Length: 92
Image (tube, rainbow, N blue to C red; front, side, top):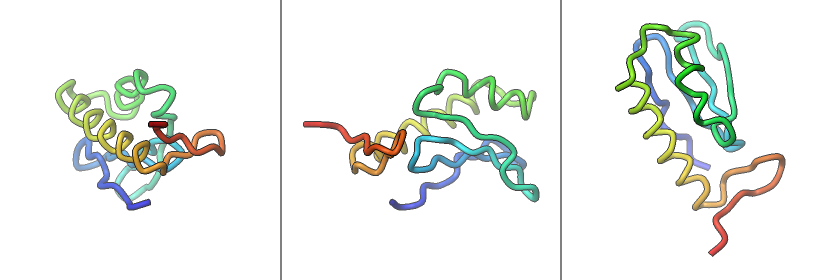
């Protein structure tokens, strides 16, 4: 699977989606500071981001979620998404 562009929140934080449907929150200079299942708990993402960076605005959160949704759609379409050890591909 190709590596997606990180979804940047600001100069300090960015999110990366991986092939298991998890997003990892990175802090520049520190590394991973948190992770969550985007596949199952997408609606919790704003709280997840705000817990680490309370100054994040709704526009930024929306933009990040759109980027991650697009990446997730790509992963599902190509059959790259593995959830619970199983390939989750769109059956057509």
